[in-house]
Image 1 (cartoon, helix red, strand yellow):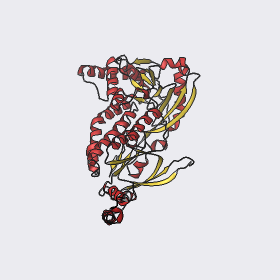
Image 2: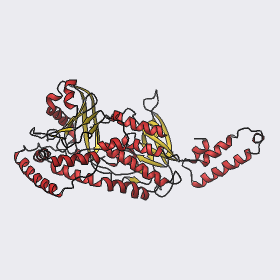
Image 3: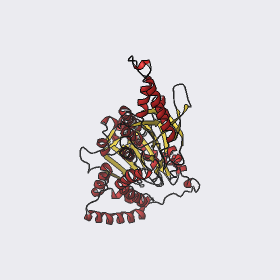
Length: 480
């Protein structure tokens, strides 16, 4: 932008902005009567005048994962808005199972090149080693996509850049939030360190923006700046293990889930196939200090299937357990993990991150009316938040209930695995996951499932070994 356009976007009062615009027009008018105006010479001040009149609002998206990239590509397509996307690590490989539902591939126009493996079978293993293979209800064209986050994230982020988003490889450190930002159009000042060649710490810079979307994960600095409140969190731990081609054949279309208090007291362990390796991991909320103990257990449970493998990458990251208390403050909105959009029971977050980023951006773009106005907090809450909660609130509620029933002890875990033998359970589970709709429309089958659940729980509780006891009263109270 020109000097005049830049000044018009800084933190100056509306009165001063008006004075600046009038002064600019007077200078341009005076220049029109200089000799250069009559000899065909180009008038430099005319450009400055046009820039002032063409001033755009600036939207900053902080975080370049699926939620931020999907938001940025929507904003970037609106010509009346300047879009800036901050990402601290452009080759970031977030520790993540990497599973995406089939509906995401089509809905977000993803090429098959971002999908490493198409999983059509899921092996569930109970605490006592009972195995149930599910996936028989899938149609030939249905699958769960397994991807590496560095591939998926880069693809969507590059698409946002192609649409016109300005990418800044930098770390947002703090944000100055005006005291009256809920009732005024005053800008936010972002402080960040831009990484440049030859600089290990980054060059400190600032930027004034009108709207902020926080897509910077569980440790969101945007959330802290806007006083979004804290939430409980899990620690997810994953090792990428390179195994032989012969062993990889077993995981060609297969993923595995292990349940038991040895691998997690409140979640599950997994072995998910990637391009040329498997991701082996686990997670927990209630006993985070023991995460490495649980990781060793999942490796031991996988046993011969990954024996002799080489660990090529170790990853760990916090995962939110519920929504932030406040997801919108003024013209700052949270999406993805920053907002707390990860489901219980399955631990899924990629789809909901991408969907929330897109939904938030679409609603804010509509409210900005082609860049003519700024949205209010009430407007954002009544559109983005209301629509998101209406669409996906039931999914979060159902999965939260399932986790509280089936992940509490080994008896419940045994019951969970046995229930998954039911074709009806498999059908409902896969349909709900693949297409993001809460399924279960057959009253007779639902009633039978209730009876089966009670029977399996009674059997599981009678046969399962007790869970190991643990205590961490200090760590369990920690929030982010």
